[in-house]
Image 1 (tube, rainbow, N blue to C red):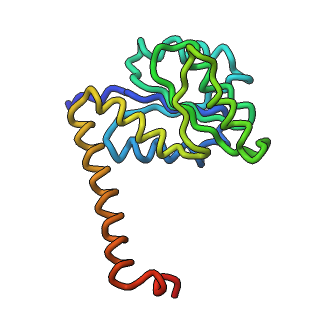
Image 2: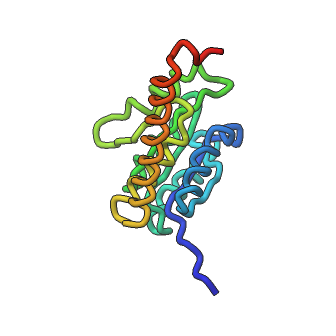
Length: 174
């Protein structure tokens, strides 16, 4: 019987309404073959669940936590205050958000001593790529997948540049 992959990344969000954004982190981690878990942990509505999750994450084998939150967006910072694992914050433009700026600033402006890596508004895919990159720094197979992924991005851009050169930028709007 094949051994199941250990779960390396925890993806948490303040509400299930954040799932359409946070799904992108799960999708890219699946693409890289990295096992993850995904759940709802609210800093405000389930603070004891949040403390337990963050306190036990490293002991359970997680290597990185991706925490998405909208509005006041305390989840990433509070989790980072509790765990010694790297935490990547995903600010989410939610229904109660001020164009997402409240979320961005809540996650970005952490006090010295409690760092949270912060990606762009709704950029859960980048959070997944960053989590994979962190793991890939220590696991060669994942590191190779990241390098291959970046090579694919380079190839796509070069193809677009060649197309513009060959067809002209003026012909791209027809």
